Image (cartoon, rainbow, N blue to C red; front, side, top):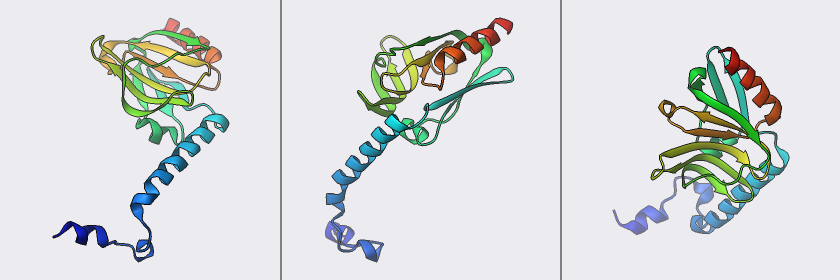
Length: 164
């Protein structure tokens, strides 16, 4: 089948007159604007909860799509340290899955294979975050997540880890 036949045939008659190539930049701009609006107006991009003997980190809403990530379950015995910081800085290495827009968000998996680092970030820019150092067997070395109240969540998790 010639290439012209593939390009000219459209499965939806309503799109017959639209130049699809011309819509691509517009679609990208619309998606970036929607992400920026979500970063400025939305709540925390992650929920952290202890369920039984596991710590669950759940991306909220559209963050799951932008981060290409689902819930992360870490056994409490694999959580090495919990802290929070007002300035998370930048993720290490290269983004392997997700979205990274400096000044807006870091959502997804970031890795630096030369140093053996693999981190999950669920943050909008320049906001306090919860930092979890986890054992190597979990697939990540660190999880950086923006939650509603990082300091209170950190204190609660440290109390749970002290009892475990």
